[in-house]
Image (tube, rainbow, N blue to C red):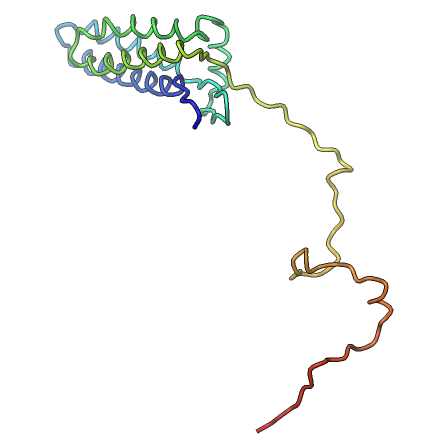
Length: 189
């Protein structure tokens, strides 16, 4: 059985925790909690985390489904180079971003989720994984002469390919009607 790619799980966990931080921050700020400024911090941290985590990384084996509009954010994340590619940096960054949000009840769930994502990123980094952007494959242009096929000569319905074979020269020369080896009698009652 193949190995688990931990970075994929950490990406989903961090993206969800960013959304949870934004939601908790809105609740804390709109509700004017006693320490509402941690709510505004959580909104800003959640937006940053969502922007960082929105582009998925390419998997080592198999195909990776790209998120809608990911190609635009991928180019931004690629600009930061090793700071965003290295999962040790992401693990520490997520852990540091989660600490201030832990002082407010409305954002503690986002803090816990972000700490879990940080731990998963640390595990991915220990296993040697790193973020590789999903690059669009260059489309090969088909050659004009190679794609044109001859239209079918038999009208539909056509028999399967193994039944459909060209008659040999001997069969073509036989020409006339075929003789049925089983006698047929017409009995009308």
